[in-house]
Length: 338
Image (cartoon, rainbow, N blue to C red; front, side, top):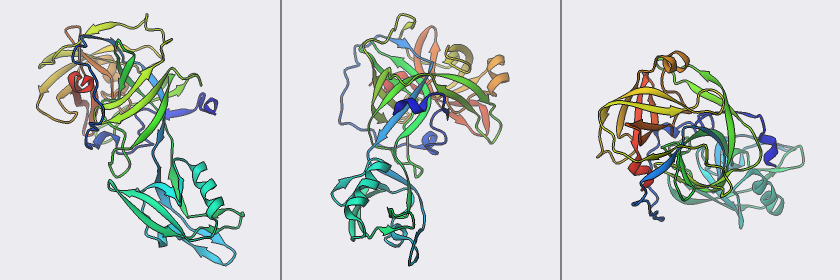
């Protein structure tokens, strides 16, 4: 099934799939503890990778009408279902994808059915009666998004093969952290750049290069996407760098704006706030003339691009200023490691 993603074009940073990814600040999941305290070096990222992420539940992105022999009805809307709800189950059947919904409706058909939803972080239930449309299928009258597909930037791979990417979480349209059940990582290539302008963020565009996974995705966290690179992944071409602390002054970002090879570009760190509890520890400004010419500065898809200072990795790019694409935010590497 994964083969169908070959050469399919995606927007970096899940910009079209998750509209609020750049502004979501949900609670950190503290159910897992990782022993990164003794980690002194990591393999430098900055290269593009493709993601397919499986979500817990299916996000409702729209409500619609069902055309039946007796007229037009709106089962989900009439039951009080809202756009942005997460559909968790229909009756006793879990619904993590569109196929799950179709199978559940074949079981319950036109019987009144208890539907479990998550809204604003709380689980609620509604009673809905599916209706048979003119095509002979039972429908609830809703559009859903299940799997997330896109391309993002890897920040680092540690010596245990754990990787981090993006530097910020993937969220629903109403800015809630999306619960995931896993996913896969793929190699990809950048084929174009939409230049950023004042008031309108630019974006990187790319394509999956293969349907063979090079790693797995395990968590969607406040500090980014965490996962595991396959043991047979060749890290010989990657650069092993020390971990450092950032300060105001000259620095570089490592990112990919063409093909599959990351490059270094000059920036300045103009502000440091280590006490910021989320992912805006640095204010950065792009000064590299070549990058400014090509992209206008920071664009969607550079999220996760590592920041280097004095040859050490100190953090990653997380956000772009909409009114000034030459500026953006960054997160400290310590927060991603811990």
